[in-house]
Length: 264
Image (cartoon, rainbow, N blue to C red; front, side, top):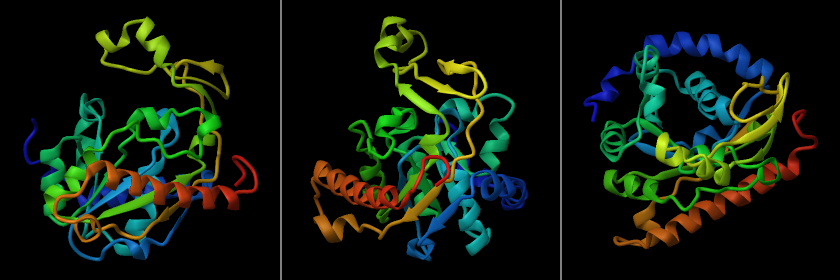
């Protein structure tokens, strides 16, 4: 396991990257992030979010754009991510902008350092959910994020977003197709998502379609102190059900406020 990954974060480089990304995030996606003041001002916090947009998920850039603008670069945002993101020639760049391998050791170190750690429990399963379920919180039964928060003694800060799953039409995760092609054995891939978009039309990951300029809106919810609310030895499934419940309620509210797909 790579050691000391959180020390790679470079606030200067991150600031430069955000200055480049901001016109895209605020122009192309017209992003808005509400209630950032609910993020605890000090100490570590685990930001638990739904994941949207497939290959071009914008959840982290949208959140980071507003967070860094409001609070500056004294406190890093770390994102637990797939090994593939940190592999190859771009791995060092992503490492310097806060992306770290998704494992409990990294999460614990980053949280105890006082940083914000963003986790997407649903991962690619969530990011490729069908358009018909675009406003559904679905972590695929994964609850490891709760143990991460408990181990570090930090609150969970739920974050919900809407709009990202309207970047194209997501038809299916392709779990059956992936199994038929034995991708789970060959590439450790459990899905082979099929979508429809611009300019190529039908896509099974490739060819890559251009994301539509969908309006993305996020809302930070009240922090959850697991021990205070559920006791010293909480039932993980009960905590998970509560987290998903408050997130689903907030996502339902955002969906009710949304007038049209893509347009917002």
